[in-house]
Image 1 (spheres, one colour):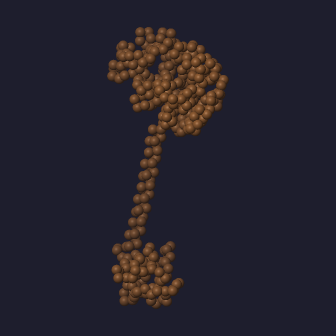
Image 2 (image 1 turned 180 degrees about the horizontal axis):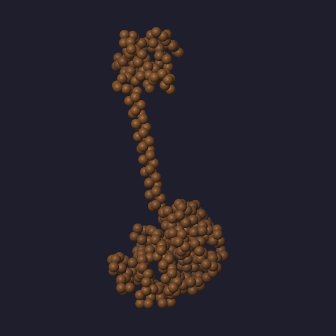
Amino acid sequence: MIAGRYRLLEPLGRGAMSAVWLAEDTELGRRVAVKTLSVTADRARFEREARAAGALSHPNICALYDYGESDGKPFMVLEYLPSGSLEDRLADVARLPDFETRRIAAELAAGLAHAHGRGLVHRDLKPANVLFDTEDRAKIADFGIVRMGGERTLTEVGTVLGTAAYISPEQASGKPAGPASDVYSFGVILFRMLTGRLPFVSTNAMELVRMHRDEEPPRIRTLRPDVPADLERVATAALAKNPADRPPDGAALLRALGGGQGERTPVVRRRAQRRRSAVLFAVSAAALALLAGGIALAIVATRGSGRAPTAPAPGSSLSLPAVTTAATPPVTTRPSTTQPAATAQSAVLPTATEPATTAAAPTTSETATTETTTAQPATTVETTTAAAPTTT
């Protein structure tokens, strides 16, 4: 039992400087991961980094729940992530599918953006430190966990190859690590996910360090001609030797991957898009309602109290052709055919006995004729036209 609360169940991993246990939080009734450090650890620095890690809260960063000391040994209580590591996945397959690579890369970039925005640099980003939760979400682990620094880390059994394979050129030169150092390690991870291999391979850790410092990595397209162009560009930029030539931090990586500004995750963007769509739909519906109301008012105003449509009042912007009546000689544009006389009522609704050539609805000009002839019921209107009236 650690600190009278965390019951250790089984070991999850052990190294020269620490051990990680699956444990039960007896107070909250949940499973956690407890990491204990050896007595040789730099406790002051460990506490400082633990407090920094405790300030991080992001879906793509392993959460730190507790920090303390038990039996003279410092410990950390971390989120338990049971779905394995990225190293496990890469060891099982030659390379990951592109859709999975894209998702994991975006999630790692989002986690780095959150940490870099709060002044924390991971310094040892590698697939073994990328774990997955029960929803298959990638989370960066070991933020703030001090690797007992410098050359000693590179010579520790079991960590030399993993650390050396992802080390940035500036770290290989003995210079301090910054956010761009994490970007370089991210580039190595992305290179491996896309190609199924590391950019530099050697069984000698110090040779690996030298290669990262001095040699250019192979072009991804020469190893895999069908690589997605956008992912290739991000990986190539992240692997630049000069930190100034790389994306400067996780936020820049996220933008380069199409993740938007700052730390907006794809889920947040989808929610924002749904909100925008809802607003546009509401505005469109309101516009359609206003349009429908205007049409309805126009119809009511035109029909009045059930009478047939009448011609616009003088001064209206609608100009109607002159109406040909019995008192006015018909205007002929082609050889004419004489239509049967029509009453005022049949000018609006043709009867079933009319010839086929006059079955179409009358034009607007005939509607005006209706209004004229209604005043003189006894008068029959004759019109001469070149073709059947056009429906309006």
